[in-house]
Length: 425
Ligand code: S3P
Image (tube, rainbow, N blue to C red):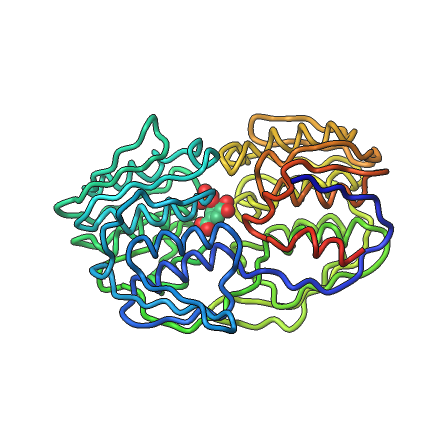
């Protein structure tokens, strides 16, 4: 599907963002592992969380929607999961594949995890290695999916220092730890998103500047009724759009504000953005608030090191902000972008060059010298939801018309994105 977006002078309105998909995956998985019925009030309809739900159903978990859209999940613990009759289909979702692998590693039946072509290129050795250290029987093909898991006699607790700051790897190991004989400790030097440890209530210690997170069999999840926070990572597209379009105001109520996710908010404010946060509160164990965004003159900024994990998914849209800022915007230490749903460094450099931006590519990031006006043309989503949405926002500021090929990729995290964007014009 292609979408054509034209330059606008004004954006105005209130955006009903979808629920956070990182939180949603975990809420569904942990509900399945709990003993009893859980209710998820606003489980997202987007493709990735639905992939997790599909896999759970393949594992015999009952998950049903009420007429008003609440999702009921009947958890029967690890022992309630049944051998699937076909490979588990994780679609485009790395979180589904990596977290499920941690859960399945300790179960008494064999499973295979498969996904689409994008997921098939993403590195899986990063989960296979620690799981094998725990005694799991995992086979990959050249470091990639399909992930074959055979029953392991016993899983042993390990202490694992994360070689990359990845919440998916951290969560995978911690989830395997729920079925291990002794405690498992994951040590992270750079803090990645902490939804798993928050939702499971895992003990976390700060030792010499590093986080030590423990999981153990007695820490299995409990059934719960949850309202999920709205997705900060989706809000990011509207935070940048509302900042760079010359007139109007965007309101983003009930947005998740977990500090391990909101790196972009601090960076945009450093750039001079006018983003107001009101009514900060905690819902379902996650901080949320109401955001209001107004247009502002932006300045270039440098982002690197420990800042990167807390805005890793927001870098494509931050690059769009960089094209409108005065001076240079530099993003380094972001090599992980090369192994997301696509190579996001290559995708953004290619698309922004086509639009006429002054952009340099590095192995671990990019640099943009802002101020050169963008001119609409044909660009590609590279099959990646965040690239599709970032280019949609770029189309609002580029002169003339910008056609995004593969625009339907947005439905991986926000099926309503294009309609919402149109409603704000
Ligand atoms: C996620 C973790 C991040 C992020 C992804 C979702 C999660 O990936 O990019 O969109 O829900 O745990 P990594 O763990 O690979 O950094």
